Length: 236
Image 1 (cartoon, rainbow, N blue to C red):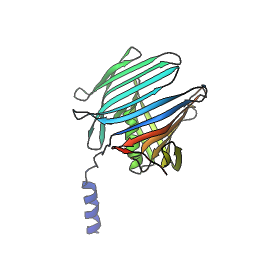
Image 2: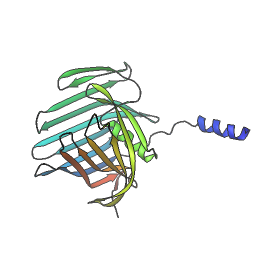
Image 3: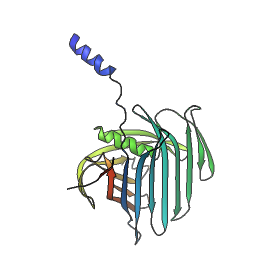
Image 4: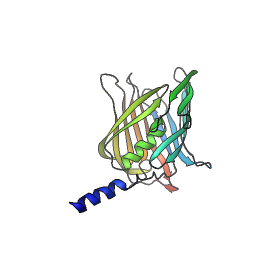
């Protein structure tokens, strides 16, 4: 019994594993199913000189464009968002969201479509871009059910996910073994569907995303080429 207790205490004393981030870049084809033209998308993670990281996503096509950029720091096993900016143009009304995370004042300030944002900031809160890295990290760690507190516009939402299993994804970079994950939503509250695929052998890089909107419109991105920590992604 004594040895079992000592082992348990030793395990509890082990500090949480620090996040190990690897820079990546990936380009995708972007397909809006109801439109006759396709577009392109790019996603990049890079280290900045001041100790922050920057995650950027850009998607564009003939009639619409989307840009999303966040900066964050890493403290042990925790992501600490610093700034977030989202801009969409075309396909209806444009949209701009800006957020700044002040960890000393424990406050988020910014604007959503011109309306001011001011909310209390607690450790664990993520922006709509950084939570994707947290999801990527947790899937790599073998988690099968994940939940995040995410600042969505001017509200804090709970984003739930679950792993559906393993599935091979056929991309222009080759066939990649992936973990398939879906966003869990209450079907009585939302008809949106989001499914993501993360490549097991490439730092759990996002290689495919499929989304169905509430109006039935479908959107998908599929990996064309990418690199993780300087290594080109190559499938079977």
